[in-house]
Amino acid sequence: MTDHLIDTQDPFEEYTFITKKTKKLSPYQEQHLSLYESAGVRFPKIGTIYSLKYLGRTKKDHLFEGGFKDFVMVEARPVENKYLENTEIGQDVDVLVLDVVETPFTIRGSISAIYESRVQRELVQLSEDDFIVGLIKESSPAGYKVAFSYGGVTLTGFMPNTLAGMNKLSNPESIVGKTLELGVESFSREEGTYIVSRRKYLQTLVPQMMKKLELGVAYRGIVTGTTEFGIFVEWWDCLTGMIHKTNMNPDYKMSQIHPGMAIEFFIKEVIKDKIILTQILKASLWDEIKVGMVLRGKVKENKNFGTLVAFDEETVGLVHSSEIEKHSLKFTPDTEADVKIIAIDRLNRKIFLSVPR
Image (tube, rainbow, N blue to C red):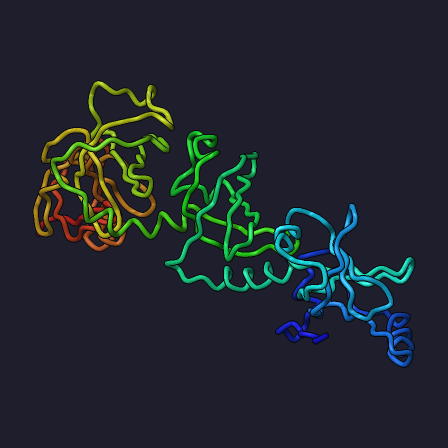
């Protein structure tokens, strides 16, 4: 028989996730180890893989012989049975020793743990472009139970609600029973499960899907959220955009719109990775403004950081407090004022103003 040591500096740490009983040798076990060895009886070392002779199975366990004080027992569970389906009596099999108990003397081992450990190392080292395929089995208030296979091993995963999509799913049950591509975020040793993410996979689709967007083409998506200034929409599972309230179909009322509702829209503008949507194909002042233009607007209100000037419901600019102090300006709410555009932040839809000179 040949002993195969686990390829790790700390084999006990390596297999903590397999069983909470796994532990290092006690002083009592250390003492008996020398006695067993002096008598020609081998003492199994926890965290070591041994090549053992298969003796068959009882109702509860598979039995293996390796010259130890007793048989090595592998629990006859489905996860272990599948690795012994074609194994004949007397055949050598690699078995990992998980635990040794003195009273009554028992040696517990596992075959599946060997494969699970190898798979675990591979999974946590997957590149950003590598994904698994998992079955979403059931949902709970916290997330989803996921089952997936990798390297011939069936594993359990957990996907938090926050990682189930690009945005919070309006109907959490909508993905239960589906087989989806998922990314592996991490492995929880305490729970013995993998943390997986649908969002991680969807994020890789964004660049290629954004290239398919066309102006003037009608799209259909799902409302994921609403605010006082507009609604957020998701489509193609991975793209998200906003429809400002001034660009909404007048037949819609904000009070009637809710998450999960299907809605049609057009692409208004794409700025880097931000997509602006509209339900009305029209050119607005926001589409035409340029640095250097002088416009007449209505003073909305004075803030500590400056004065807000509105040109229409969608287009509002800011005269910063530094500009006001510099030129000794005074703005009265609800009055009109001529202002000059000095900068435009299209990504964040901000307009910076001064006064014409």
